[in-house]
Amino acid sequence: MRKPRWWAELSLIGVVYAAYTGGRLLVRGDEASAVDHGLAILRLEGLLGIDAERPLNRLFTDVPALGIPADFAYASLHYLVTPAVLVWLFRRRPAHYRAARAWLMAATLLGLVGFTLLPTCPPRLLDAAHGFTDTMAHFSAYGWWGGEASAPRGLGGMTNQYAAMPSLHVGWALWCGVMLWRYGRTPLTKALGVAYPLLTAVVVMGTANHYLLDAVAGAAVMGAGFLLAPHALRAVDRLRAGAARTVGAGAGTEGGAGAGTGEAPPVVSGGCETFAGEHIPGQRSVATAADDTSTPAR
Image (cartoon, rainbow, N blue to C red):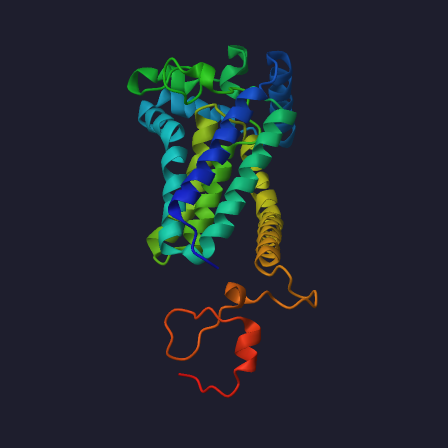
């Protein structure tokens, strides 16, 4: 398998991410249905006894030493760690890069399907009576973000704030963790592979950007992407092979005109023949050359 070209990979990833970002903006749900979905998730978690968002959010709000670093982590790490792991795989583990990249892209596009089918209001946008504080708005003086998710201040219109289910922050972090654990060669790398997704899950809940079930759904999307990626790769390989055969057949037809028809190929140079010692073909006809059998080659 030929090693991927860095510029082709960069272009492909840029196109997919642009399509993901644009699609995420286009599938914004209406506020009423998003709030209904968010409250339904909260009620389900309450019934199951797994509603860990409130105590974590209260802790992060009351202790700035936890809340501010968590806000920085939420606003920046997925932009830094995920590309860094991709580059690491490309440079240090090229044999595994293509499958890993296909897995990440397949899961990301599946996440877009989730945003389309289930627009969800995150905890921080629910009515204050539900007990959540938007820590990124609360501590916005310490960072570049405002009160609109992790978008830089003034650019909140460029994000879909109801794209909470599934949490791709958690999904991407899980992908990074698996790559670090599987292909890392030091205990520190493997430890980071375990810690990073767990830390991300705590951060997304503590900042009130996601429910616990959003995080679970993010992990499930990554699992589905893992199963889908090999089929996607085989489909791409078949398309490439078919295109190569088509191009090769076209070139063979053009270059081999007359082959297999039983017709003799035309005489080169219209009957001119070159004898030994001649640098320029003599102007002899085929018939003359055939009759001159007694003349030795010069």
